[in-house]
Amino acid sequence: CNSTDENAKVTSSTKNEPICAFPFTAKHYDPDTTEPISSGLQSLEELLSWKRSEANPFNVATVPLANREPSLASTPHRTLVSHDMMGGYLDDRFLQGAESDAPYVFYHWQYIDVFNYFSHNTVTIPPSVWTNAAHRHGVIVLGTFITEWTDGGKMCEVFLKEEESYRAVADRLVQIAHCYGFDGWLINIENPLGETAVKNTPLFLRYLTDQMHERVPGSMALWYDSVLENGQLKWQNELNPSNRVFFSACDGIFTNYNWTEQNLEGMKAYSAAQGRLADIFVGVDVFARGEVVGGKLETNKALEMIRKHDFSTAIFAPGWVYESIPDKNDFRKEQDKFWSLLSDFLYVHRPSSPLPFVSSFCQGAGTSLYWRGQREVDRSWFNLDAQELQPLYYRETLEGEGWLRTQGCPEDAWSGGSSLLVEGVLPSMLSKVCARIFSLQVPLSSRVFVSLIYKPSPGVTVSLELKTADATLCTHRGVQDIPSESYHTEVFRIYPVSHYTHNVCLPPPQILDAESLSVPPLPVQSVCLYDVVWLRGANKLNLNATLRWRYPAQLVRHFLVYWRRLRGPDPRIPSGKLALIGRAYCPLFRVTELTVPEPPGLLELVVEPVSREGFRVPESQWGRRSLSYTEERTDQS
Image 1 (cartoon, rainbow, N blue to C red):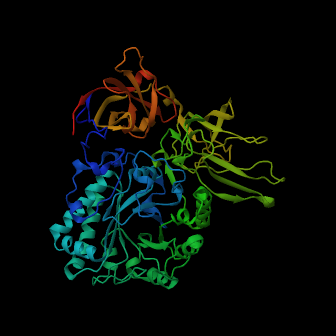
Image 2: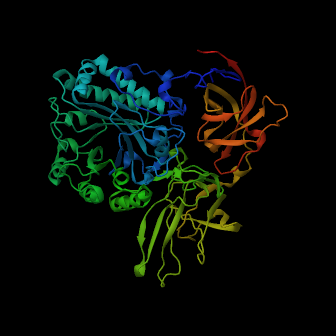
Image 3: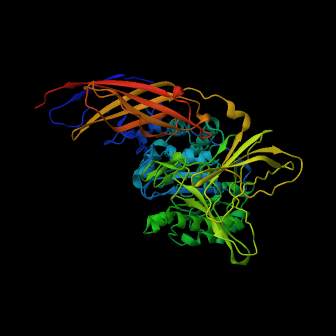
């Protein structure tokens, strides 16, 4: 840590105005609250002057890319989602979350392979909350490099004029992706190119692709179908001899949206596509702008045709679902409807999760924040860092006009902001029904501890079953039902056996290696405090500061950050009790607008880790940092 500040002075003025200027890079923080925010780069000059030492530490993804089955390289029909959402950097720019009554949330991760964060900044850097959520599900994330119109043409003539200049741009793009922890770029040049610039474009793409592969294994660089090999700006809606040179220089092409089945047939027969059909992402504009196949609630028609010819697809702007509905509270229902229409043409991949596997089904938003079934914070919130591994969302038709549906339920939760609601109509000829919740790749040890927490409706009995893909399947012993108010916890141990005993219906949300339960917790270490900013408002003093500490990320579900007053000007007032400030999902947290007693004073900031299994660590292992502060009064006219 730098500039640790244990004795902070408060300089006030007679005008009762905000005090202290930012001691750090202002563009990474909200100017009113000092909350950490993400943003893109606006120009070529800003890109070329980018330095790792000036990067936004809060926008660095902390979740490594999960393994998955099948691997991306072996997936023959890939699905890319390009998140073009109202210009980008909305509520999701707040890297520690935002108050939002009805935010846009994406949670159908197991259907997609690549996520592209798209905006019209020259360089779009994905907010880390998106990268973390995608990586948790084995989905790679691409930023966007875009040039447009007259200014874009001028920019291209500058950076594509020679090898030194285009390599400098590519090097910065690679450094940015590596620093922030995402997985590649969509290159979108939508302006004409001069003779020299267009000649150097494939060289730029090849160099960028090679460097990305070297620095970020499993990364990807895609070219958008726009410019032709002669430099003309003319969308082709297909791969053909006019744009083949760019396709050959990178990992794939994202075609424009106004294709017909004739375009697909021509591409499939085209020699340059042979052996690389999966690298051709046929674009689908969900807004259905122009002469397109499908779009909106008929997007499935486009996907059906694309899959018929064995291509990958790029679904552009699925936020249409959110933007098109007048009542944003209907979003989840409409989102599930949209993706269910596409489900026949999407392919589920299974994240590979080491033990412990834990999920509360939280989608990363809610009307309240819950912990163990109780409200911890009673307000609407949005933070994709809180999104846990998502289950399968679907609707299934049963016999005799029955049906079964799984969906997120923000009205109640055990942990986070939502639970999984399994509902339906059970026809009289069926005595039970199986709800498939997860498809996972989880290695099992000889003894495994499994638990499920549920809240049944009256007259409904819930049982928990597990199926493995191997010939050796599992049975269970030692079942224990533990009622807790209106929730029930079913706990049992699984032992591998050599005969088929269960046909799995309901994989549980928590699977633990039984041996790991006896491992003692570790202490939080090296807590430091820096970038302190004091803001004085109407009769109150607010503290803003950054906390950093050390703790193994693989052991923690989240951290709880508290504060308390140790002493103040009046010695008769005892120390205060711990008050929750918020949750952190990595060992870095920005305290913002914390109202503290008038100086002189002494306060303490406290960090409590919550383990992956949901167990709280003993208080003796928590991290602590004290801050004393005094006031320097200056007279100003």
